[in-house]
Length: 239
Image (cartoon, rainbow, N blue to C red; front, side, top):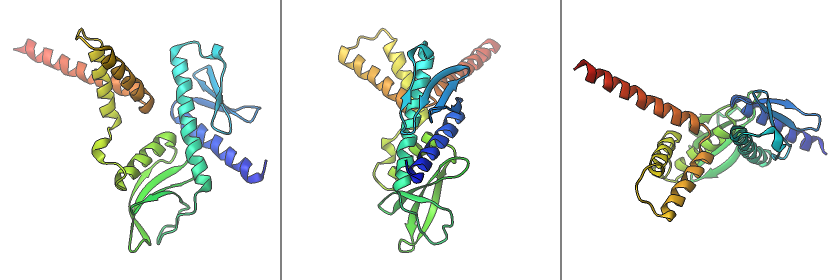
């Protein structure tokens, strides 16, 4: 393995460790050159230097641990994607830009860039001005936000560049409410065709994959409604 290839893989595992630790996982390098991942005291899996994972079924006997394993895999895949892009991307050059950003993508006068730091990769989007020589209105994501920052930066780039309309995208909070509504519909007694039921269930699975903090957002939404209910009951009793 060349020195540059070894450094690329080292940077990937370091970035993955930072991102996983921010998500509540414990990580340690293994003797096989991989990254060991634990949730509390439970070994979940190992992340290899290419972004794949290996695991033992007897280490993840519960649905919660399986979900944790899947989450690690999604994070590792996203990080492997943007670390490969950064490795191949040219330096971003603009008047007044002193930091070592690399140009990930560019479309319609909008730039998606990233730079490495000791705290993890930071992403940014800008718009070109002054005859394509300067950048302005920077939107920053990270550092250390990992896959979340990458996905948020890509979304911001897609909207700013005109690749997607803002109204075609939903926030995580909106998706959490849609998720709740679908489950309430599926749990109701309303008549429903098999096709519609499958479509709704497929939609919930898609939202589960797309929203990393879905469980927290749904729980928070439920708590907010309970608070409103208690307030209304208290006001009713006063009258």
